[in-house]
Structures are given as structure tokens and as C-alpha cells.
Image (cartoon, rainbow, N blue to C red; front, side, top):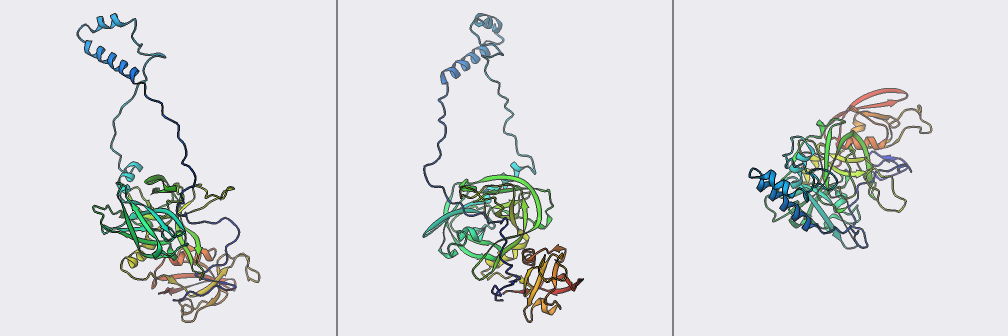
Amino acid sequence: MTQVPPSTSSTQELPPTPSTGPTTPPAPPFLPPSGPPPSYATRRPRRSGFAALVLTGALLVGGGAGVGGAALYDALSDDAVPASGPGAPLQVADNGDRPAADGSVESVAATVLPSVVALEVSAPGGSGGGSGVVIDSDGTILTNDHVVTLGGAIPADQARITAAFSDGTRTSAKVIGTDPLTDTALVKVDGVEDLTPVTIGKSGNLDVGEQVVAIGSPFGLDATVTSGIVSALDRPVEVGRDQQGNVTAYPAIQTDAAINPGNSGGPLVNMDGQLVGINASIRSTGSAFGSEAGSIGLGFAIPIDEVLPIIEQIRAGEAPTHARLGIQVSDAAGQAGSSDPSVRGARIERIDDDSAAADAGLRDGDVIIAIGDHRIDDTEALIATVRSYRPGDTVEVTYVRGGEEGTTELELGSDG
């Protein structure tokens, strides 16, 4: 299906121009800073002589114990270091390296880190980096489209990619397919053995407040582990649009696990170490100095359930397809001339002939306020929600017409 070009009212795939309020940019590929590396304090040399003296004394005391040990202590007592006080050696508690408890962040990190990959991307005129996760033993790595295209600056097939694994292995990788509308991409490496694919879980099983772990390469710091909770589910997030007006949006998993530039494409996992999301974007306050702001506890991941069909299409060499209603819409809240300015939703401006919306009896002027159980407050929410379905799925649409609420069922069309 051809996307409807932008007009004075936006299409279902193309909401109106964003307001000047806060934006939710994708966590961009990491761009290494210029200038000399930061300096670090020089570590002072160890006091090896003192350490040897203390060790020698300890051996002497230990050797004398049980064989005139008390007499030996008395003989040396004038010069001995007291057991306590300012001159006594510090006591060290050594509990050993205990095994990680099941369900702990430590256990999750040990399980997932071998599957996480740092991606270095370069092309004429630019370079950057991001993260990825191994999804099969054939060397397929899942990441973001904006990682392999340097934020849309280059075509994916021009990217030169190096994959760095947790064991230190480095090898080249090539893009095998992308889907800009869901910010998804697959790259593949050859000649690397004993890969550890991540276990894919169900994002639909997540609950608000559930603990999660994010792993990636923020600011180029490979194999960084952060943890937090699921702050919200089905958060409509729009992160960009192309020159044809096609919108990148998804119903995101919101988390307060620290996500920064370079985390893009890395896994968000549950406490069983299962992949439930792809870290993709952050809410940023910006910076007075023009640099990318860091984490403020508002990170967003693409739910794995929504993009798994896209991933399978790319792996099979097919062009990804997406569900669509076949309408042009605009934000309804406060719209001049609306019969009820208090109604929030997506107002239908035009319906394509023979579209899913036309077949279901929807009309120009109807305001869509819900798709299934998902509330629709604006066009961004409508796009993100429809993207969570597949072509051919049957959904219930709730709308307002002339002040009266109604519902209809329709079978979603396809842009394929």
C-alpha cells in the first residue's frame, strides 16, 4: 500500500507536525568525543616493604603458636603492632565470591552478556555506534534501524559495521534488512563460532513495576548493565518520520533503567534473562552546551511481541508489512469547529476507497477514541496502536459521531 502523502491534515501513518513541546528522540548512535582522553589520578606505588614486614610478623606469630608462642610474643611485645588502635592493620572480611542468586541482576547479567554485541558503524562522512543482541546461532543480530543508518544519515547498505562480542572477538557484519517504520534492523556476522543466542520472551507478560535489566554500550562503554523497573506499558512514542511522511512510532515499554546514547539496539530483558524489548529511545531535556543529554530515567524500548513478525519477515528475505486503516487523521482535542471540543482522539479527515475503515462504515468527521482496549488520545497514539497489530487482525474501533459514541469491527488492511 502506498503511504498517503502529507497534506493539511495528516494520514493515519502521518500525524500532524509535532508541537514545540518535549520530544522523544531515539537514543542516537554514540559519536566518540574529540580531544585528548580524560586524565586519571596516578595510583601511588604500594608500600611493599611495609607489607612484607607485616607478613613476616604474621608468619613468626603463626609459627610460634603452640610452641612457646606466649613467650615469643612477650619477647617481641616492645616492638609489636597492637591488635587495635591507630597503628593496627585494617581488618578485611573475605566472604568469598558467592554464586549469583537466581533472579538477581547479577544472574541476569551473567546469562545475557554473552549475547550482547557492540556495533561500530562507519560510512563516508560519519561514524557512530550502538548495540545489538544475537538472536540465532547463525549469527543474526537484532538492532535498530537508526543504528545502522546513523540516524537516517546514510542508506543501510552503505554502512560498514564491526561487531564486538563480550569475549573480545571482533568481526565485520553486514545489514540483511531494515524496517524504518518500527526502527528495526538485522545484521549478520560470518565465521564466528559458539555464539550464544538470547532467549526471546513475551513482552505481553510484563507488568508495571516489574524489574528489568538493560544491557548495551552507552557512550561506547561496552557491556554496560543497568537495572530498573517497567514504568509504563503501551506508551505511544513517535521518534521520527521520513521525507515521504512515513512515521516511526510504536507502543513502547517505558523504563527507568538508565538508557543513554549507544544503548540503542541493545536488549531489555526480564529477570529470567529473556528478551522483552529493544532499547530504542530516550526522553531528553537537552543541553545548554548542545551535546546529547544523558539518562533522566525516561527510556523506551520496542516491545518484542510487536516486532517479532517483522523480524521473521526480514530473516526470510521478505519486505516487512504493517497494518493500516486507510484514513487521514488529525488531533481532535480542542479542534475549531468540533461538535465537542472536549473529545480527545484522532479525527478522520479522509477515508481511502476500499480501505478497512471504509468497509467498516467509518465516516469523515468521526473521532476514533479507542482501538480494542487501547485509548486513543491523538494521532500518535493511533499510529502506535495500529502498528502493534498485524494485517488481517480484527479489531474493535470505538468512535464518536455527532456527540454519540459507537463501535464497529474491522479487519485491518496491509501496506504490502
